[in-house]
Length: 114
Image (cartoon, rainbow, N blue to C red; front, top):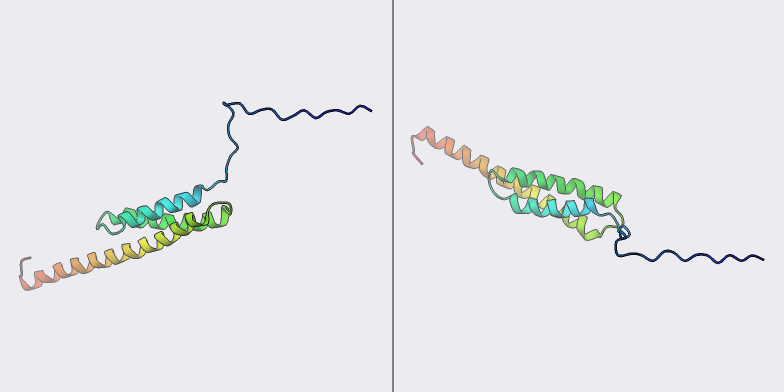
């Protein structure tokens, strides 16, 4: 009987690469874009960047939910919620700007100087 002793796995060296952890790129991107959308969404004329970031947060949040089951749930959930909130804020700011320009335009009909 020739029993072969299995060789033990090699010891990790300080220069070896660690094992890859769970991928959570989409969820983290959604989280960051959602917060950026909330930060920039309420600023007039710069809010378009926040609006675009919010749309990106919602899209990547739903993609992260579907493709990254091992990612923490809070990441993509905060990204989706913050993204929808930033979209709503951006639309409200846009409506206020449109009403403001319409009001200024109607003042010129009465020869009133602002």
